[in-house]
Structure formats: C-alpha cells, structure tokens
Amino acid sequence: VNKARFEKRPVTVTLSRVESTPVYYCPTGTVENSMGECTATVTIRTPYTVSETHTACPADATEYPGAAPGSSASFSGKGAAPSCKRAATAHVPATLIPGTSKGAAKYACPEGTTPIGEGASMSCAAPTYEEIPMETFTTSSIAYETSTVTETV
Image (cartoon, rainbow, N blue to C red):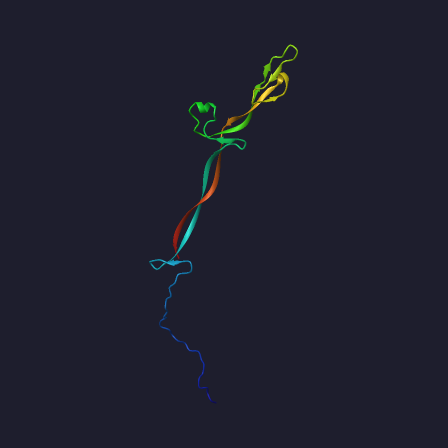
C-alpha cells in the first residue's frame, strides 16, 4: 500500500514570545493632551433660581413721574419717586341760585362740571384722579451657570 507523500496531522508548537506592535489613537470626540492622554471636555450646566422684585401700577391706573401737580407731595419737596393715578369723579354740591318771586329756586353747576340729578338733590361731577400706591410683585426664573471640566478617558 502506497502512503501519501504529505499527510496532514496536528502539530503542537511551543511559542516562546509574542510580538505585537502597539497602535495609539484617541477615540472620536477626545483630544490627546501634552502628556499623551486622551481627554474629553464636558460642559456642566448648574441651574439656579433668579428672583426679581418689580413695582408697577395696578391695571386700571397710570404711572406718572414725581408728584402729581397740586398734590401735597409736590409742595413738600418730595416727589422724586414715580406714583400711580387712577381716574375718579369728584362730586361737589350744586350752587343755589335764588328764585324770583314767581319761580322756585334753581341750582347750577360750576363750569367744567357735569350736573347729576335735579333740584335740591342735584350735585356736580368733575373728572379727577386719585393717587394710589404701586403694587410690588416678584418674578422667579431659572438660569444656568455653565462650567467646563476636562476628563481623562
């Protein structure tokens, strides 16, 4: 019987050393620093609450600078702070005009006022304003403080 020239059979080989070539690279998104380390910069946002106090006139009032003309504050030397005014109606009694011997007494209103009612119960209305205090309110919001940290990967 003829034997095959090349026969395949398992062979055990002993290795005395392993040679390898190191490959150095930093992962995507990182940078190599001067010491050869791979670093990543991380941004940290820390939330904090910001509260602010505001003053404003109520919805039905108007702000005006300083003291209102003719108000006690305008004569006292005060009046640097803004104030609020709201439309109002001033009522004054009607003036009695004596009647003649034939007629009853009549009532009249001063110029610039509006008569309300008739006879002895008549009064006169004039547009004016009243000073009212400003309202104080606080608003809160969240802001973020940003800081960066360099991490070694």
